[in-house]
Image 1: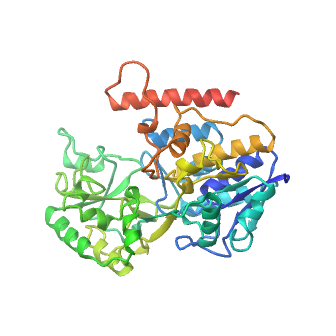
Image 2: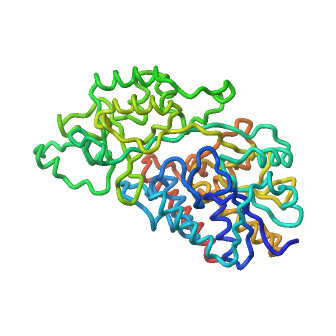
Image 3: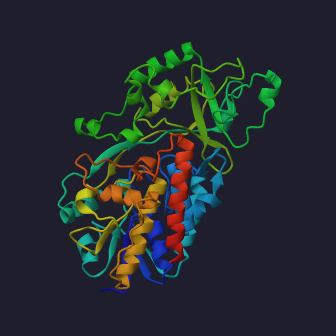
Length: 456
């Protein structure tokens, strides 16, 4: 065996893998096709580029993704630490300045003496089979794996289906938002209390918060009509069938019924419109996208509309009539394995123990989940490199372990999975009916397991 480990792909999972392996003074050859070649959704030469939302989701321990982030903090995750370092205001969520975040990841990886970054497209310039012959190899090429490499993965795994599709949301400049209509606030913190005057309510400090755009009934119905009739980028029939539910384009969601959006991403619950002191008919939220607070993305507005249509239709949202769109939503191909057939709980390929997979290609869905898979893979690759027989399997009582178990357990209808409490085993004893209390207990149990792991 060679005296190094190969990592293919320097996205979120690949960067975490490389860093965690290098911590053990093991050499890493990190293959990344950028800047020679970019996927359809990438345009930044830095590593760990964030394509869709800039949010790493909730920081609360009563939220599964919040718990997962805390598990990773306890394990000294590079990317979660850098996300904390480059965060921007987003209420109870952890959102980052995407440019600064990827710059910091790039600095840490490229300055590490144990990591050699090689600009090369595996599958085109060098064969995956060649890399895996004599060295442990981790494939972390994400949901946008290039065609040549995807073909080699298909050959190695025996799979002939590796694709599904999702979409990203547009971004607008803050200065182009009409604040005669828009207002700051977090859900349930922006409802007027009975004993408050309107003046007191408007002056209430809401701290780090979203920008909210309220609809009247008439405004919403006009917007809805134009949205469902707008022109979209044409997809093939097989593409239409494979759009992942967790990233459903807003125009497709809208076609399920006129009130679908009002009970989904445009729900007005927990807000009052400062102009009327009443709950809006519907409401769009904008989340800060950069450190300076000059860019905001439309929450839940992943879309496949043509760019001109996005400008026309989304400008009908109250407060965005003069919006400057600096990035439009895009539809792109995603790639993932039938992991229950192919991988074990350490993300190792069952038929070739020299190969691991990490990130969204395994069917974990989301930034933090991808980093989580990278952590598990790195620790096990290190053990294997050091000729230790025992595999590192995290308890299924942790989100890290539960995700690893989910992607490796038999499942005839396997779909990508986000962190959620539903994949954890039930608590012992009588069922706790209060959700918040139950989730708190899940978190205590999980972090106790992580603490025990860290001590070993």
